[in-house]
Image 1 (cartoon, rainbow, N blue to C red):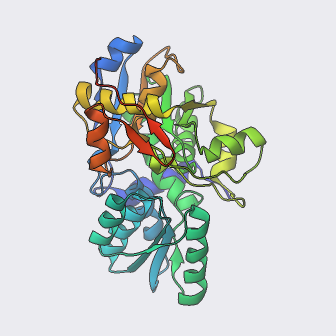
Image 2 (image 1 turned 135 degrees about the horizontal axis):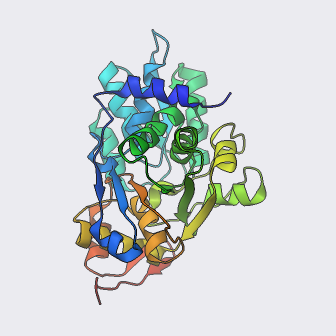
Length: 334
């Protein structure tokens, strides 16, 4: 099993009018900082505030008739997407999460009518509850990333990017379990084989990067991060997102919590956008000099379902505590 451009084109038809055509806007500040056009794909404009609605809608569109309900494991945004898509179809949804997930994301999922189960302190523990629900209650699992329908749904972002700007030289893709990166990479490589594809993730707890370095999926300890949506493992039995990322990404870049902190401030003060830490890792890679652009580039502003208290601390230059780590505050422009 794999994912092809044909699957992504079919997904585009399945989500049309509900989760597609999000804005693509230039960042004048990043143009000045990098010397190249940098475009921001605003998935924060989705009805659920995150790109995950694309994959969830496509996956539910392919469920067999008579499905009793759905379940998933999530760090927040996938659960919100599944909850939204399930409610639209009148289906029960049960979202399983670890207690590392911010309460703002838990509340947002419950507000969409889904049941939330908090299980342990890792995605692996939450996934075990998903498997139990599938076996005991007959619910259909909608995986967050390692699923052909989900990957194809996320890949519609790649279609939209290269349809709007065929001249793009580089795509900077936030990297977690690899569903977004794999989907965009499949579309981009099919349309423009020579395009530069860079996965970007946080330094601590970067499961896909560790797996790519090892040559196979590995377990990685989950830690608190400003980019909390990028947390969690990729699954030791990963079938799709790992090999697609391995085969299609040109490189993976790691950014620090301090660099993510600064990029959140830049997006807010310069582009007037509110977004999660996971959304700004592409900006962080450019602003830190870890990625140098040689032509027009784009990145995905993946979501806005953030802890507003933490966000306010960042944009006002306060220290932020992440578990046992403290990210030192710094006023923007200081």
